[in-house]
Length: 318
Image (cartoon, rainbow, N blue to C red):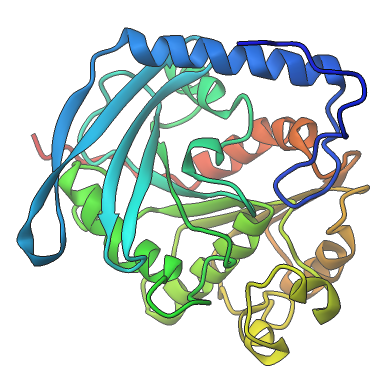
């Protein structure tokens, strides 16, 4: 893999089309780390699991496991989502190589143009292992899935990411003996578009009478104008957006604890600043930073600490 970048290459952008706040040298280090992660993945065996496809047919789902002190412990599988009408990645970020049954789970939602494999801020997987191993955090995992670019709701008929999160993810977790007896994630966190999605998910859980234990939005994509949101082609019209927009429904998550992190130079800071006094989140951490990888990484210690306070006790089914 070539780790160099031409000096005349256009500036890198993040998943929302904003300039990436990393320096060129930092981006080169990311390329090298990605290569190292790939080597770690190939170093562990590939096993097969079965997933049910429409009509009851079974298709093997490849599972890869990557482990290293720096990138943490991850497992990647392919599963069929009837809600989305396609196969998606299911990525588990684990606190140890042999976690016990009923491991509590935090849903982790990616940003615009992202995917499950890139949902976690840099440093989260490794820090999770370290903090759990030294007893600073109770054991819990993160699970990410591919959600497309429709702000985690059904923009196109037959592609319903929110339905996948509410109805299919608990079944997938039960099959893997994760998330408690009912397979429900105890929390949901997201970056950018995923932060928007986490608040929508939390609202739906509250409305269904099965509230989440905690919600996290890292630089949540809370836009303040339809002109800007329309560019993302994620809602059919302004009314459709308004029906889900957390800024229009700031208390719709009920008494669920909410943590919000955002840089004061973030493109979504205006929306976050409007949201905070209306929603009165448990944590509202606004500090130096732009909308990019460096700031996302800086939130990891605070986010893990916040989620750890709400992680349920484990009850093995062994």
